[in-house]
Length: 446
Image (cartoon, rainbow, N blue to C red; front, top):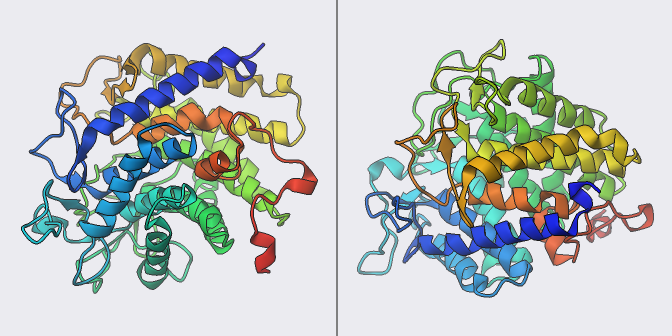
């Protein structure tokens, strides 16, 4: 019996997932969810980040949908804070970072002037979290999701179907830089929004983004440049002008290839669920991006397990970017599980997908052996030899990746995680039969 058919394996996954969600409760502060000190307490020297708070809305909403006691108030706190404290009352949109306490009038206070710019990277997580909260029927979530999606159409979606990365405070000037990370997280958010709103346009928009990633990767040996100019041509140097606090990567990001592998397969399954024509490229993209990232990134330093974060154009690890980061192996776990599921849904035998099960076991063993320091607490970063990185800052930033990794083999490729849970599909990962593929009311909108 393989791990995928093991009751005890699913129990282990469930225990780890529940511990992650319970541990995330410790990040709560009056205006959202905080970064943490090394002792696991909210860090007063760091801002309250919109993306962190949005990710907490997501994981606690998943907890609500699974019936985990106590998660409702944390999901509701995240939605309340995004509605009340992060919203820019003058220009609209949301600030990326605020202080941990509101002002005397009960309003959110930007952390400093440098974070007044608007960030689509952060918006993507807000949409993902609020869509999950809407599926979980949390107060004010449906209304906030509607506002967010209107804001997408007003400001962020470009004529080519891709998205602007960053605006100034008043939405008058777009930063002339685009990023692959923002694009893929937007596509993931749009998939969640498609199900939460029963509007297929968001799935179609995610597919347009996947098509761009496919065209880019398939002509570049299946490696995805991270940074682009405002015409979506790859940049040759570092991006300039980003103010939303994201790290700058140097090289091709293996974790983003793994994420796109999963998303391509989820988009494919979503189109199948509506009996839409499914482009052939989606399966090719899912497989090729996974294999390129696996060969480029896995066990690259003296055979030590773990994914290198970035590689160069020849597939060699980049000095300073060869760390083994938690979020990358989590995306490896979900991509391996997604590929196995996609092939099984297409009718292959379990023996034909043993490669992906082997990858899944290897990646999960790494998480167990090196990352899980105690239930609910995972190490965020290790060096290339899996030694501690002194400069690593504690956070619940990556809990969304880890929770999804613990759920990946337990739910279908479509609908997305929150909707799968709401429809009672936990531990029923197989695709629905052909006469029941429509998970929602999309067909009534044509």
